[in-house]
Length: 116
Image 1: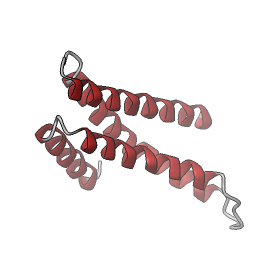
Image 2 (image 1 turned 90 degrees about the horizontal axis):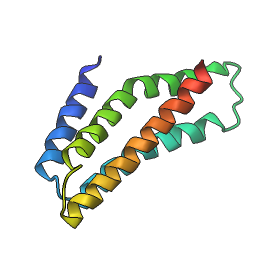
Image 3 (image 1 turned 90 degrees about the vertical axis):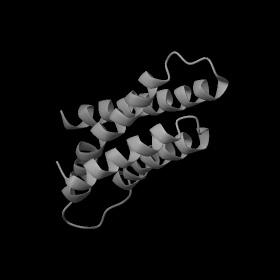
Image 4 (image 1 turned 180 degrees about the vertical axis):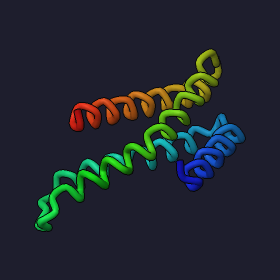
């Protein structure tokens, strides 16, 4: 495992725990995480003129394999932490992270379907 991803994970856990009631922070983090995957899917289906057609798929696979565990851990951590909250802000944070978790699992499922 690369040290950059561990630093990213620790940094994300720290800020999301410190500002656990900031809806905008959770929304921005999830948009960045899954916006990156949307960009990867978009790049996969662009016309490719290079004779090495596997290069796009290999990059897509590497990025998914190295980032999906961290993205899922961040969302699982926040869903578990906010699952029994009553406050409206905490419910919104729970829903944002639940949608992020569903998006991450969907991406992982489709990725595994494509490679298996």
